[in-house]
Length: 505
Image (tube, rainbow, N blue to C red; front, top):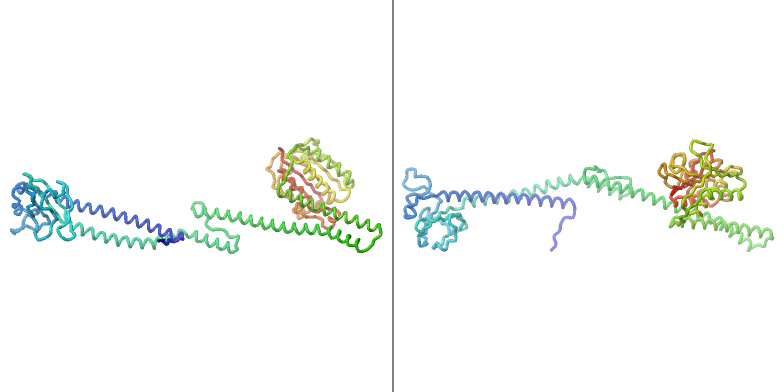
């Protein structure tokens, strides 16, 4: 057989409070009942012990009738009525009968023989009445010559008082339980009011109002601390949801941009191939068509390679951990750029000291720990970006050195500086490769998006002279994989300064 119990917190609290309070009242009533019963019985025992008839009455029990207990007569020859009953057992143990009291009223149930009377001398005991449901309190005392006297008093008054007390306790207990249910329900409802408001707010959040927060957040209450924790959790969930939505949006844009980038060379390859198959062409035009097909195939191959590299860096980047001389990396990059892109003068110099525009420092060997191939790829991407997005004749400076992170040196965030990676702690020892150009620079809108994938600051000419828009994204991922970051300082008309910042080992 199963018992249905309220599953709501409010119902359980009301039932629990009512049950505990009822048990407390019941226990207090039981203790009071026992104490009062013991006190009333003790009063009867005092009366029994206080009955001290003359010793001669043990020798002549009939004389007791002439000396009844109680106050003396008030003028009449008959004694005053008394509740006492006195019985005698002779020396042989035979009951002699009642010698005082009303003989017509039933007394205690006594055996005819003293040996059958299971009583201790001098200790009051309760015995059942001869008839009915009443009880008597009796006291056995020894007399001279082996005789015994047994005094008895009825417990009708005590039992009547205890019976009325029991009914009173039952009534008080019932009223108390009803009052507790009503008052406890109001108190519990008032105490759970913050939870009720939390429930309403949570339901509103579930219905789509994601900016709502729980109102009760007092740190000194349990519900307030719960509300604070839940609000913190909601903030983090909302941030995670927004980040997830932003990630999905970036992924959709990435897929769309990748498809767009691949569609252009693929369309060119398809068009020239169909043209070569359908119409015979002169040898010079056929060679030009083959050249354009090969050029677009190479462009598509580069885009696919960049996409595969980005996927690898995002999924599980793997870098070599070996000593790398950043000065040698910079020198090799400058030599290669001067050979293949002579339209832009380029020089290699030391990192400038903040506050000293002349730069009096000397070139020094700058060693770091990382993947030399990937770091060379970053520097090559920065130089290629400077060549591509500045007009011919623009000077490019590549600087290498060590310093401490700060607003003037790099590695930390400040207004006018953008990066795809978080900043380093200020005053951290860093190794820096800096690529600065004297070109037109970029405005803030372009600078904030320059590290995004497939982003081009000059889309009108980047398809002919620029890359796929993935170079800086790849470079930023490599820098972050080495524990550093790639950042940009630029203003319109003041050129661009890309800075690869790596913390010293």
